[in-house]
Image 1 (cartoon, rainbow, N blue to C red):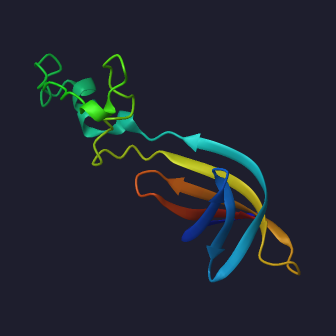
Image 2: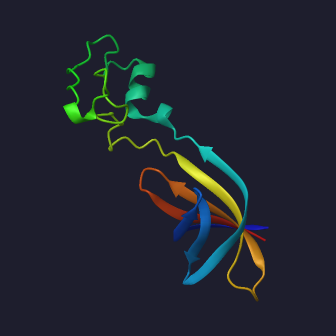
Image 3: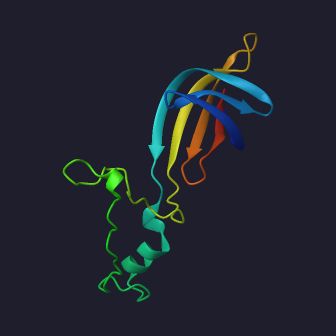
Length: 138
């Protein structure tokens, strides 16, 4: 049996995996990560993609794109042969785009040495940078 939740939790990570989490005022120590998966967001459901695919005329896929030149990197960020370092001036997607991507961790954890362990599904939301406890499995 499982119970669904949408509770916000605080998670401490170790080696890019949850090590412990605070839920309802209790600290749970992760004993084992049982599974890990990523759910990509529904980018295909965005308004722009829907407009292009439905042909409703709101977005013209043949319209020229607005472009701007990429500024040169500063001298301190260049390699000896003049190429910019790979992470300097790197562009990332605008913060306003949220495709709903999430990282999931199914963990075995316990709230203390005397308490037993349980199985919990923890979810990291990339758009907010926050964690939630989504499911408790009995």
